[in-house]
Image: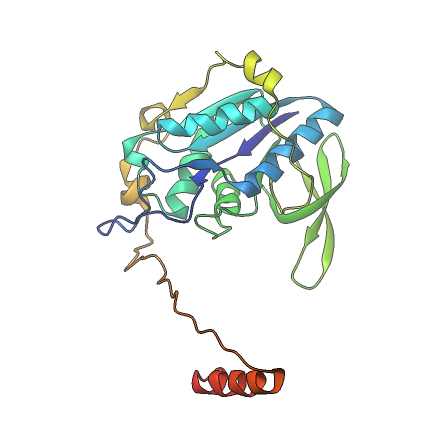
Length: 262
């Protein structure tokens, strides 16, 4: 089985500056990590490989330093890594990102299953996975919480809907976004770290894609226009009250009323 796992490098801190002109995060020089939701997707791929065999390809889009998360995926058990890195990809919204990744996935011959995390911690849109599937013209399932059976030509899953749990069967090739809790992600292996020290990562840019139209990538291919983005204001004001329970409850009631919470 040929499996593709989409992973993303996200800021490891909430203290990230914003480019006022483009409205995108300034990622240079800050601590980064694998998007936590993507770890569930990678663990799912590793469990499937353990039962059915196959090959796990991880793919990411970002600057050259994003190779760090691919190396971490190697330490967890991934077989092959692809990084999509080109200045022309910078500033992509979810649509341009999805299209770019779909073009990169085409570099993997005869893939059966694409796994994505439910969403990313720096965007929280949960749109990229399904949009990749649409660009590749394959079926997709979102919010998968449990794998029930893997057949030769399909997979049966439990899908977590807002008010119900649905059991679905989808044929390969397909894309599945997984929710947290489907499996507990394993830790990177120090032994594998030594083994993959010189393991290569394939790096592709726009020149390597079938579709080289620059208007479909980066800011040029992003129809979403951000009017303004800014860090939330931090309110550190506080009051300390003394008194017995009756006095404090009365004072709290008056304060909540003053602030128009009640």
